[in-house]
Amino acid sequence: TLGEVAQETGCHAYAVGGFVRDLLLHIKNLDLDVVIEGDALAYAKKLGKKLGGKVRTHEKFGTAVVKLPDGFKIDIATARLEYYEYPAAMPTVELSSIKLDLYRRDFTINAMAIHLNPDTFGTLVDFFNCQNDLKDRQIRILHNLSFVEDPTRIFRAIRFEQRMGFKIGRHTEKLIKNAVKMELFDRFFGHRFFNELISILSEENPIPAIHRMADLGLLRFLHPTLRIEPKLATILEETRQALAWHRLLYLDEPCRQWLVYLLALMSSLPVREVVVFCERFEVPLRHRQFLGREKLAVTRIAAIMKRAMPETPSGMYHLLKDLSPEGLLHLMGLLKKKGCKKAISLYVTDWRQLKPETDGNDLAEMGYRTGPLYGTILRCLLDARLDGLVHDRASETAFIK
Ligand code: ATP
Image (cartoon, rainbow, N blue to C red; front, top):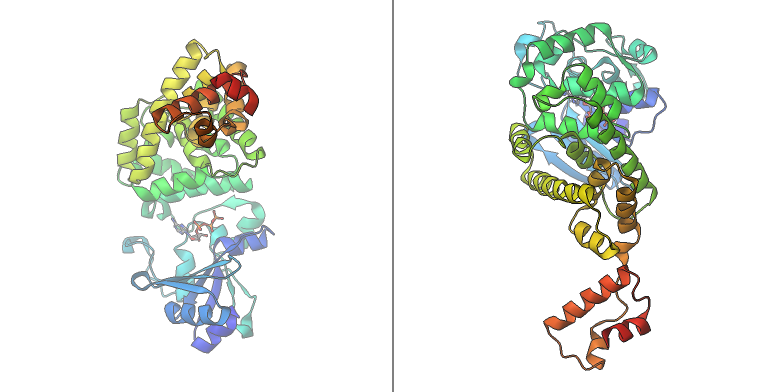
């Protein structure tokens, strides 16, 4: 259908980028990027109608997204001459628009296309010998000014390298080191970097990528004093284990892994430095507030637990009850003592689900009048339950009496 609509609209359509890379590697990828030589918006509207999908267009960028009822997402863009306004980085040769579009991409492995028009359907478009790099498992840039043009690509290189077990090519690695030396990052910060950092920290296991960033001297761009010392390495590993444990519980609560790793990375920095980081990388306000709040709360709780663990489950419960899932896992990553980890895991799996069986109606029946006392009694009952002093409605009633 994608190709037929292209033919009907009088344009050329290509699948591009990560979808083609993953297809050639036999890896599942549910996001399809399509580049159109021609009018991408007209194409998207027609495609949406034909497939019964929802179309959202961004006229300004000449892009559109078609969402199909089954959740499949197609990003559609116009083949464009430039991603960024750095004409100096471009050689002055005449190229077809798909060729230029591919040339502007980050790495050779992401710079292949598959023609979708019916008469050439399935033809691989590979202008830059990209298939070889895919075969050799190499991450290579397409031109020498690639990192000058867009330094966020350095983070992307590391992410792809570690995710796929590829290797950043020798020349590409040299250019990364040059970019680091030139302190290119001091000029380029902001939300695009932050988004790439989120992507790295969202990978299944981001720790090798963090070490690679450290080896390439990149951590200091996140913060000048950030180093992977043994203490931080241990915290990261403990964090990974805590996240793996949490995943296995299949709880119905969202937990943003990247935030847990970010908190771990920043664990040795004072909170005011986290604020500086957030400003530098234009972190959205909701994340800023979340990071600051959880960092302060977890630091306080970790200090208390290191000194002396609460003796009762209810004491532990009240210490932990205001933390988010991310905060709880961060705390688990920070604490070494087995007893501390055990208490947090019990809180997550059991304690926080507990409720007294007695409710307001029961209290009314017992002759209590509605009022603040209700809440106090129910809180006391919960504590008693946590500490094993009551275990069913009858013992709760006896406890109240
Ligand atoms: P993932 O599997 O992580 O989604 P992806 O390759 O699909 O990987 P996206 O970030 O979705 O990554 O980007 C889609 C495509 O857009 C890439 O394959 C690449 O060709 C291009 N691209 C993305 N970011 C850049 C960039 N900074 N510079 C050049 N090209 C880019």
